[in-house]
Image (cartoon, rainbow, N blue to C red):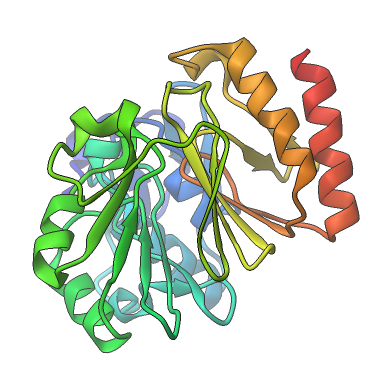
Length: 285
């Protein structure tokens, strides 16, 4: 729970506030960009919500915050618990309840007639267990890399799900049921392509769903401020040269959505997305 004795100085007066336990993971700024902003080392409240919808967005950010750094002094709060998982497309959801164990990384959920998928892991919570159960359970848990596994083992045990992870990341979830050894691409199932993208970590992978949605982990993200794709060079733990090669290989694929573990989601026409990706590869070189 956020502590009013630890407020960051930049908060504007009002009901919502951020305290100094913030880890600057970007979750709140993704969910309520009109309310929260980046100071450089942490987030802060730059504008108090002025509409019911903005208040809903801010409350969603409060719930999703991995370290409980956001508070709300109001005695009357919108109930947004049942909003999660949040729909992104007809069959793709953002889970919410980001985990501090993944440094606030995003996780996503896909409903599919041949079995549902969890991409990376949120906190293990009874609410999400109930919601996932209502949506048909979980068949596969796709783990992009070692940093964002969080409570994947608990969800796997709860639902009898099979975890997919690359062998080079296996130490993060050593009991994973499916270990990927490929070095480039695997057509795992209809609608699902696994693309190996070393760079951020040695065994990083992304998942392409229906040639439309790319779940990118820490490989690739979207910046809405300048309408561009970007990669985190300062958080590249294995090899920037390998990440550049991996990024170039993605030019062979078509997709409209980038859903990142860290960083904003992006939705662009396929041609525009490929243009933005090509620009990023050029900058990386």
